[in-house]
Length: 197
Image 1 (cartoon, rainbow, N blue to C red):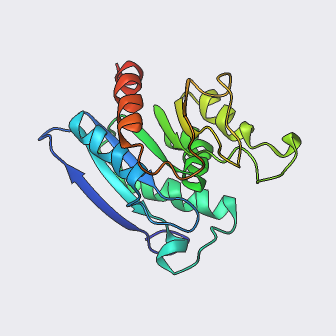
Image 2: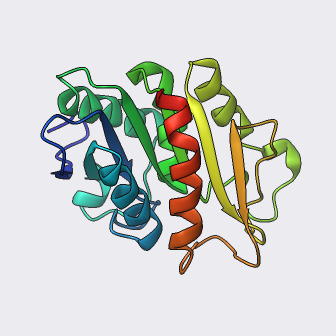
């Protein structure tokens, strides 16, 4: 239960003593069982994480749009605080709007790393001045390393290498990252251990 209503969380672990907690979530109108989010979940499970796939409160109540960013972020920080009572090193992430939430709240929840799938740099057709790059910078300023995986043809734009610790661009892909499980697994496997070491 959060101040924005109930969230739905599916927890999984393989290691008896998890090395870290990975909290992952969905895009604006989706669910956390998309192929790209599941690729991250499966990868970090193999690395010894306990994982939490979060359906945020607005989706639980049936809304497709997240509404107020402040309310969404407040609910997220409550969810993470409840999930991480043991104080494990924290990795959080998500796709699209969920990637934005993970970046905006990284400092508040003490995340060591953020995995941002299909980070929507700006609304389609918007001028560069409407960039959301400040959200990536806020995560880094708060001490979190940020991995971005975006499609080369994403209509929301692609963050630059100066905006994240690592940016992986999937050739020919737009915003959905479907069918690119191997690229996502490779990116997370190569990058995350260096951050958590």
